[in-house]
Amino acid sequence: MSKRWWVLAALVAILGVFVGLGATAGTLYWSRVETRGEQLASAELVKLSIDEIPKVLGYEYKTVERSLTETYPMFTGEYRREFEARAVNEIIPQAREKQLVNQVDVVGVGTLAARRTTGSVLVFINRTVTGKSKEKLYEGSRLRVDFRKVDRKWLISNIAPI
Image: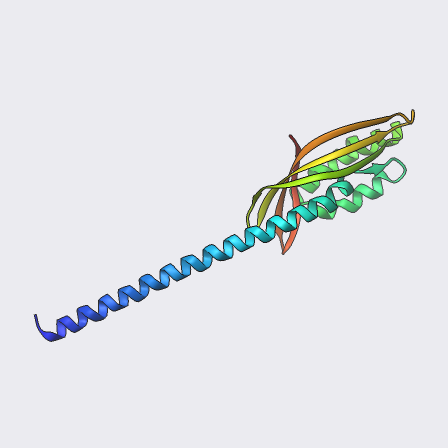
């Protein structure tokens, strides 16, 4: 082989090393971006859950329609339709008929899964329900709350009791 082939082989080898190093650096960078995004999502979802879950689940029979209507923008489109139907058909009529006051306190939140655009949290709540009889019902519950990021805003995509 001539000297020209050796030079060409050396250049190809050097180019291969640079491509390999570039791919490794890109992979490490993207892994860091994903990890940081997951950490930020986890912190945001915990704060959102503490703030939003009492608004979504708590109501007073005199203002139940208004308070639930104010929560609709917190949901993704599909879950909003589902929640709105449940509110109109079940929650609002029952609250007015039985004169219910539903107070919800979040006592704990833990992240189940967090990605840059989706996440799930486990929310521990204490609920106090008071009706016409003024007798209070105390209840503790666990909820799985799923979030999805839509246009840079975290929205609730599902709430399910566990």
